[in-house]
Amino acid sequence: MGNIETIERLSLNQITTDKWNLREAVDGCARADIPSIAIWRHKLTELGLAESKKVVQDAGLSVSSLCRGGMFPAATNLERQERIEDNKRAIEEAAELGTDVLVLVCGPAPDKDIDAARKMVAEGIEQIIPFAQEHGIKLGIEPLHPMYAAERSVIVTLNQANTLVEQFKTDAVGVVVDVFHVWWDPDLYNQISRASGKILGYHVSDWIVPTPDLLMGRGMMGDGVIDLRKIRNAVEKAGYKGPIEVEIFNEEIWNRPGDQVLGQIKERYLEFV
Image (tube, rainbow, N blue to C red):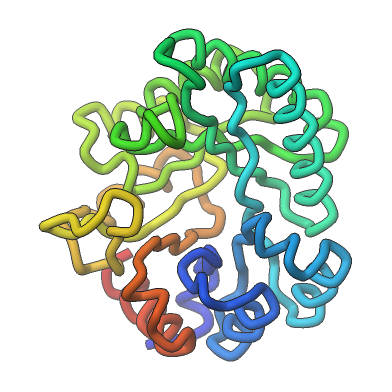
C-alpha cells in the first residue's frame, strides 16, 4: 500500500481537504508521496499566485489542473464580458502554475431560459479559445450531474459536452469526466468512447446511498455504488493516461485530520480506482 510507483497518477483535488490552505495541502501531498495537486482559485487567491507557484515547485509537485473557469451565462452583456475577463485571468493563472488544463464549470441560467444559457456557454468558450491557445492551456468542459443545472451548470451530460467540443474543432477544448456527475448516464460508455483523444481530466469519488446532501454528499471511493474500475478502464481505452484527481465535497471528510484523509485516499485509490 502506498508504493509511490502505484500511485504515480494520483492527484489530490484540494477541495477534498478544504480546511487546509494551499501550503498545507502541498505539504500534506509531499508527506504522503502524492505526486500532484489540483488547485482551486479561491485557495490560490489566499496565498497569491507567485507564492503558490513557489510552494508547489519547492515541494516537487505537479499541478494536474486549475479549477475553475466557466460560469459564462449572465443577465447582461456587461456581466458576460466580465466573466470572459475572469476566464482569461484563470487561463493566465493556469499557465503560470504549469498546468495545461483549466476546468470549466459552465454556469447556470440567469433566468428560466436554459437554451439561451447553453448558447451563452458556447459563445463564452468560443471567445476564450484564442487566449487559451496563446497560453498553451486546454479548456476542459466538465458536465455536472443534472441536479446542479439550476445552480452550477446547464451542461449536464457528457453528450452535451462532447457536442460542444466537436463544434469548436480544436485541440484546445476537451472534456473532464467526473464519475460523480456521469456514472448514472445510460449512454456513458458510448460517450466516453466518443470523447476519445479529447478527455482532459478524470475525477473520482463515490455516490453514497442514501445520498446525504446534494452538494456535500460525495463519498470516499469504495463507500458507494459507482463502478470506478469499469469507468477508469473506459476512459483509458479512450486514450486518457493523465492524472486521476480525487475530488470529494463532504463536511465529515473535511473535518478529519488531513493526513488521515490522504492516507485513506491512497488505500482506496489502490483498492478501488
